[in-house]
Image (cartoon, rainbow, N blue to C red):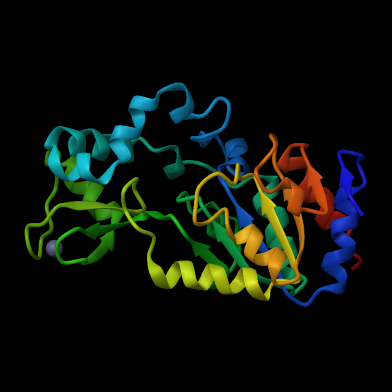
Length: 258
Ligand SMILES: [Zn+2]
């Protein structure tokens, strides 16, 4: 069965979910744009329009240039995630969890909106980290972002680790920085074990996370992709939906029996 933009795909996926024990969802920036958080790699993405903006998020630049760090702290203070509210798509995934079949919600987003919507924190796998944490690049101490931003607000433009004096950075994965192996392994396992794998709002161009789709398909999962533009993995999916995420997910959850 191949269902593409015929309006019936959401119902098809709902039937899969009803008969599956283990559903894994992968979300990308496209699920948060309705909440006012810009995506980075889409047609109107921050990095698509301004490749120079990537410099702020490249680890070697961050470590080597205090001015880059000052800009990064400033942009963290102004990040829309501090005031953003979850949207209909985030809330639909909370409903999906209530049915008891969601085993993992893997997200490329750092905005915390799945947890804020009400998804159980233990189900959320933040493969690219979280804006709500800070990590010391020297001693690996983890501290809350709010405390570091308080120091920035108090006049320290580049706060250092209070334990060792090392450089602090948001607990997010920058360009040139590896994913946390334990987190990636957890995501990989959730893909292998999935009976239904639903990729939502991701361009599926960033590895190794995008490769989870192939891992899920190889493990026997039925794959559905919901994204505004084509992805490199569309051929692996039985259902591809290009309608807005905020319409498709509520429709899918609404089509579930009970
Ligand atoms: Zn430290």
